[in-house]
Length: 229
Image 1 (tube, helix red, strand yellow):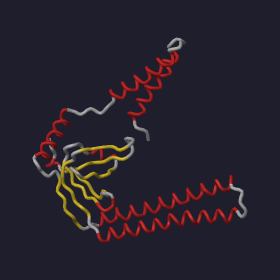
Image 2 (cartoon, one colour; image 1 turned 90 degrees about the vertical axis):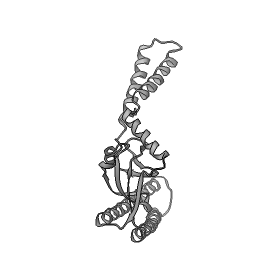
Image 3 (spheres, helix red, strand yellow; image 1 turned 180 degrees about the horizontal axis):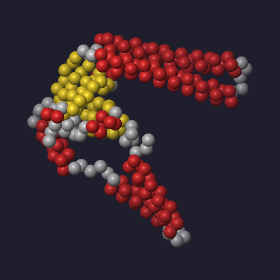
Image 4 (spheres, helix red, strand yellow; image 1 turned 30 degrees about the horizontal axis):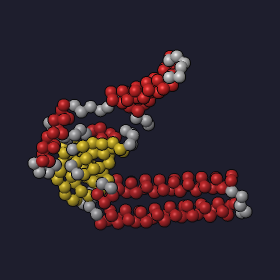
């Protein structure tokens, strides 16, 4: 799914380009003028559709900066054992990774075999294709087994971390439908978009994460009494 803002900008840019090419009379300067108008429209729409910080958000960010400058902790952490909900989520993630690896192995092996079938001039193609299939699936399988053993060991020996604090920043890496992060002081946690949209900077939050596995989110909830309003 494409970012709505990107579609708006591209719509105005394309409309400006085609209209300028159609309306500007033919001359040596037609294409440079058309190009300049198109770029100008793109910059203008980009500026007009940028995310603007409200006065309330600026007030909250200033309050966060003040608390940091005073040396106050914006998050408290403690470790705890996994509960049944945590373990269910961890093992569901493990099964998901297994499915992804199997699918990737089949796709990669099929692509290589398909290319060999069309382009390679080999004797005993079936034997070579079987060898490719075995190497690809075996290699990814070995890597997956190593990964799963390491992951299971982390679950058996590790604990979750419970953090209670203030959302100090929100950011999106890449496209707006891609990776969303909530930051609680120095801790950055990847979250789904619906959770990202649930919180504003300054909101109180309790999250449970599995730090050894990329701060994997296990649980989240708002803490209304901690909101900076």
